[in-house]
Image (cartoon, rainbow, N blue to C red; front, side, top):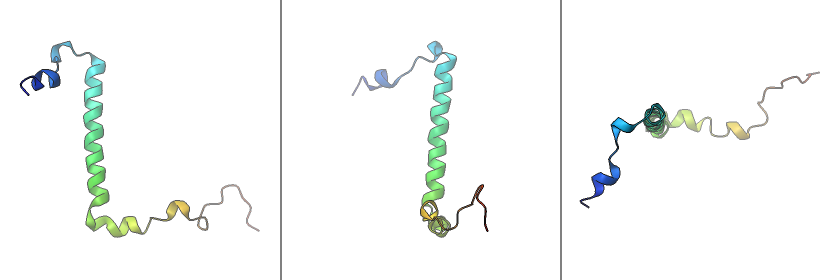
Length: 70
């Protein structure tokens, strides 16, 4: 366990622009996922999401793009 900081450490001085972009992208994605999980699994939002649960499988209320209705 004494070598753990050696494995997890990073050389900030040697990081390139792509390395920094990767760090910021990863942190942004992680924070975004936490926010989305919080919104979706919050009990106050359950009714709003439950009312949309069959939306992808509902064929009757679709938009008829380009079809003629006689």
